[in-house]
Length: 401
Image (cartoon, rainbow, N blue to C red):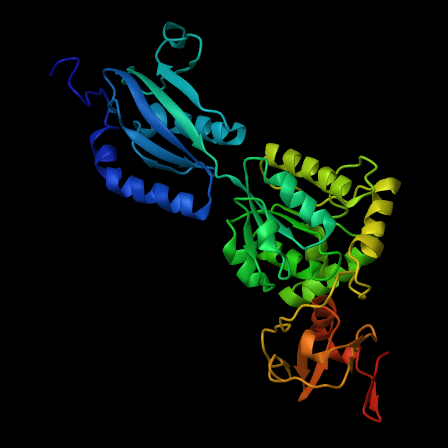
């Protein structure tokens, strides 16, 4: 056996371990699965070897953020542990790197290569190129407010996949490349976007709770809410009801008010402040804790959006109510009303007391009676706890607490 014979080693780490490694086809399947899940990973490829080592030029492996290695770049003692740690670092930093392992690292050290000692008994040399594959950031913007519209326009200029949720929006005005969803179902929204999206709820209360619920279901590391403190508490309670979870866990998932403090006042300025925060979140990979930081000017701006930018005068702070019927996870005592069940008589929203048009409003059926609402926010609040809003019904008129 000559020095150049492949797989020559002086220890027992080679043949069995290499035989156990996955095939190229299996490795390709693993890579497709990681990409489809939107999971960051790194490719590690052997680009140079000096015998005796078990790896050959062209041997490859995939490494996940958890440090799991699939493929072959040499035995555990010789190369795997170092490749795993350097691959995780490359994913975190988003930059490729070339590493070398040799008995005397100084012998191969040169610009552009990070040299490490070869720790196994074979004392060969390996150089491995590590390339991180980090999925494109997905931004989910929920709402048709001036803040939401401005944020979609600004974010579309960046290397971000933008999805907008606005059931009444005009898709023709959305920038090219932006995906538009009309559904308001949190589960459907979460399924439509890549895992771990960045989420901004900016419907001015109309269906912010549904945006928050979708973000929680999608394991979003950032859920920004454009709202005042009072509005945020209402959103938390509604989202917790939709998710059937503890409100505190939902509250901890939210950053409110969304955005950095730039003394923003207008919808476009608030959108710019939110985008600045999103860029910072994207640059700092990993989980982002919800923030309660606040400045007076930013809080005033959020309060102004609740009162003004939403327009329309509904209690939820949004515009006209959706034609889509509010949905439920369905119990017989609290089910969704058929949208075709219409009447000419006006109805009273049991949550806020507003008079609404039953033909064009969300509705929920509870114990055989259908109730209509000014917006999805009120419908969600009612669905979570109908008894909290229904005291009595006197002379055919709905009475609220």
